[in-house]
Image 1: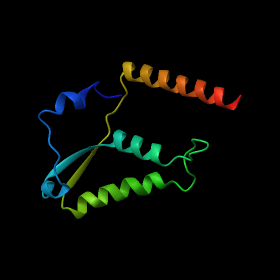
Image 2: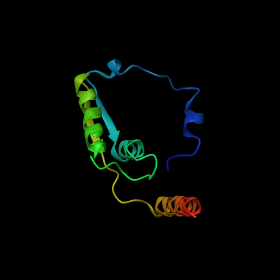
Image 3: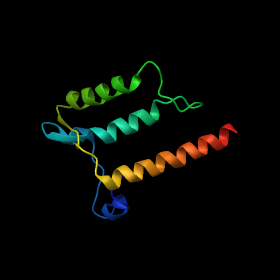
Image 4: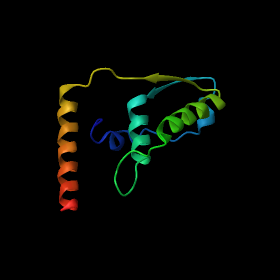
Length: 106
């Protein structure tokens, strides 16, 4: 869900850095963002179902290993109970997606 237009707000002050510049530092990882990105990438393009060999777990670990390789100490953060506003937004998205899939299948 995130903050709407966050990147547009940060664009004037933000800058890209190479991963090597974070060496010997601690980096907080938002686990839900990583898991969402990975699960979207690990879906069957035809059915939308998660692939059976569970590559999302391996990819999550590979990302962590890459940080460790660059001597970055990752701290994985799980954000706890979902706020009600986020729960409603996710339900709205789920309903819309299901409606689209029903329309395709007819």
